[in-house]
Amino acid sequence: MLEDSGFDSVAIGPAVDTFGGAIGEEKARSFDVYGYAFMARRG
Amino acid sequence: MSQDLLVDVATLRSQVREKYRDVALDPHGTHHFHTGRPLAARLGYEQAVVDGLPDHAVESFAGVGNPFSLRRLQAGERVVDVGSGAGFDSFIAATQVGPTGRVVGIDMTAEMLTKSRATAGDIGLGNVEFREGLAEVMPVEDGWADVVISNGVINLCADKQAVFAEILRVLRPGGVLQFADIANGRPVPIEAMRDVDLWTG
Image (cartoon, rainbow over all chains, first blue to last red; front, side):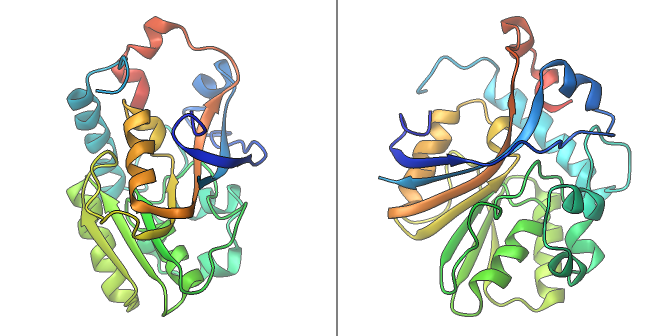
């Protein structure tokens, strides 16, 4: 979606266990939800 | 409308406002996500920087990643923080860009804006300000920003194409978008994606 929106040089960081130990952990686990850092440049 | 939206925009915004009003007013209450200093440590923020901020600058932090992990901001950069909440990432950004830089935080929740503005005054940061606005319609002029940051906000917007188009508008050519957000490794059933309650809870 980033490239379709006019960005390039897209980079993605490693997954972070954002919800581990939180109330929302079970729901996050059911869909393999993790946090990520993204970077892109306006083309 | 630039895409077939899965949920009603106004309903989703209302629920997001309600959720984050609670985070602003009761940061230590019961939320389905972590908040505050424990969350900042979990997401890998520099401990010394976080330790240097007062509690009210950190306690309502509810991001999902670290938008500074792939690139540190440079001195003098002009930064827009989309969905700035109580201001935690904006304050981090303000320290990185220094006195010659500038940070504009944008948020749609009144209680978050009240809190972030009060904290900015308390800290005495003269290079950060907070404006009321939506991710899809930001009160920032075309091409003003060197960098746009965001943390856990775009996933809460129904029309992501509109958000990215707006970010593109406020960025100068060659400007950088660095943000953190959640992504799922397994497909979410379409009926769940159309359930607005699941977007925020």
